[in-house]
Image (cartoon, rainbow, N blue to C red):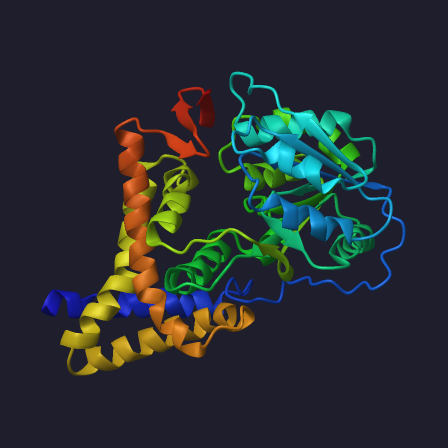
Length: 383
């Protein structure tokens, strides 16, 4: 136990460093909610929606889009669904909605990106909105996004959708998921154009069509599993401006009532996030052990000065996490779950690495993707 106590200062240094970093990765100041009551004409915008087996959720997504304003065009790619997604959309009989029967993904393409590429080729507007089939936009959100895009002279604007936080597992793990994402991809640095940080959230991305064409369309990232951040980086390499923020008004309808659902969501790309590097995985294990496991162990067993160091560590940890918990209007007591959430995400990351090692690949919506030697992000789809 004495050697664990001796590690206590390292955990304090980690959490204090996060608090005092000048770019404030814990902050929720990068935020954008709907502030437009009169959206005006939206005929310069086309919404691209890849939909694979989304019959249960896409009606709410489309209904919300129908109320955004006049002239909005919507292209839905039915990505070889087997649950009647196309029939459900057709039954809604909504105006300005075009449905494409998605073709099988070409070799080297991920399913979602190939679906988006098919939609891109049909779009004829200056602005495109990439929207997941399970994202509901509150009234005026599209006009707000367009205003932000023009006002800040952006080429790509992305919002981290408000994920559902109703079940126990959602409240424990989802805010922590967003918090850790902001630590890995500090929004402030990304928005300032830092050459090493380019962040985006794939559920809701507005971009200029000419800029997308400037990078070569979605073919530029066709094999990316983490397609949102890869798209942002591709834009930045061309000198384009990007912005990412949080929001309350782009709402994910996807439910994760069980731990298994969240576990699968994380494990499918966690090791990819580490660039399939075992060295980075070991570094991650070391940092998370010092930051989350050691303070919990010392909370019970430490004495003397180490007890005070542990208390300070936990206070710093909770202080940095509280803004995210508060932003999503959860009770302050949920901040106490961060150490457990951190440990669980570490286990998920290790499980993701194990799946990669045994060649299980990444499974999502009935497709499996395997890394190829050509690129850390390269994949082959098993149709």
